[in-house]
Length: 517
Image (cartoon, rainbow, N blue to C red; front, side, top):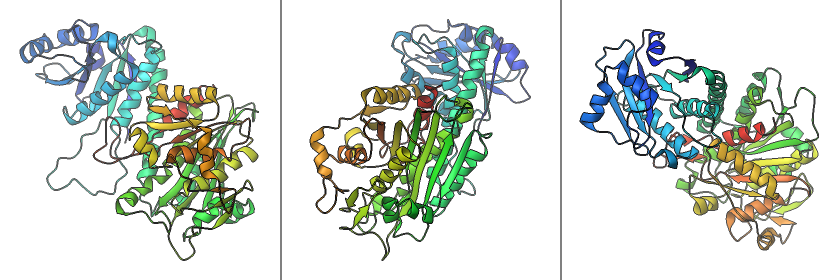
């Protein structure tokens, strides 16, 4: 259940008086060296008859970056429960990413430290270049939804005597009258971005025995059904995939008892399909054992997340009614699991891909590039895509290079790669472009076929080159390797990203799509 987000204007006292019988907590963000001089801090101090200034003077509070403090009121002010102070550090040093981190701290502190269910958040002038009130309201609403995400677990109750988790039920943003409209627009978009990211998280967190290719196809169909006619969905079954000669998908699926599915979600602007078409391709391996080259226990433990790229592109398509780009958008997923059986594909097998290229199987755990290659070819041949972004939990090497908080991106066109990187920056999702030197292209050269799927050299770069072999000249393409950023273990959960699926890529894709508005 997501928080209900509303936007209003006026003084804090009048805002509180309009609330229901529930008690609200006020979140105040402060800058170092400015004390309680801001209009909102002064208003809260006046509202509480000087309680705020007395507590700060007595207890002390230095609003350094990401510092927080919860102040209990004496409950004498109708509707007011607690005041939550958040430090932004020095005003001159604040960045957009820094603001996001403080907001993550704000909502987790409000929920876990203050045990607040209802929040009032005055919007302030944060003095960030190119960061308007509308963008501020968007990020506040977005982070409220994301920070309070409840995984779709199967728990039946709290553990032993643990207290139940507090959840945020409502967030009221207070803007001035001049910026009320912009704040409402920003908050509405922020909620939708948060909801779409949570959808992707839910898909990734679903148990793998449930999250089959057919289940993923149903999720995509639901996105289309709920799009008010803006998005259509086609689901191709195994016989269709055979007719289309998708050799990569069929090879990976050979060891499975469950049929594969090829999913196509389509959006066109009201004027009809456009020459310019952006294809979003997501890796959809719903569970990866590694095949006959089986993974060990620790490597296989979280492999339900191997369809996180698919989850991201499906969830991004749920935003078409909000984004309404002026170009055609296609989302494509080749969905299957990679299982072990007597029928599983073998090392030494030669696969004829949909494009006609042949691939010798050198390693059955390099399966994602096989399914993606067929999807990339389909995007160009059947969707006439002029631009392609693929998201894939493709290589462990990317985590070795960039860790678990930065996504590696590769591209064949500098302008388009920069456009994707800018979208990621606007989304607050860290990416870093890695090079594709020509010298590594030969690592994919096959002995018994055109290509091999287990080329040597730097793993993430070699894998990117494999995919690029299926991109035609003139098509702008970016590959995002999200193997490190798509899933959090308890030890790597951070900020708005809890343990489990992160939903990475959804908001980057949303901002990229919005750039075509």
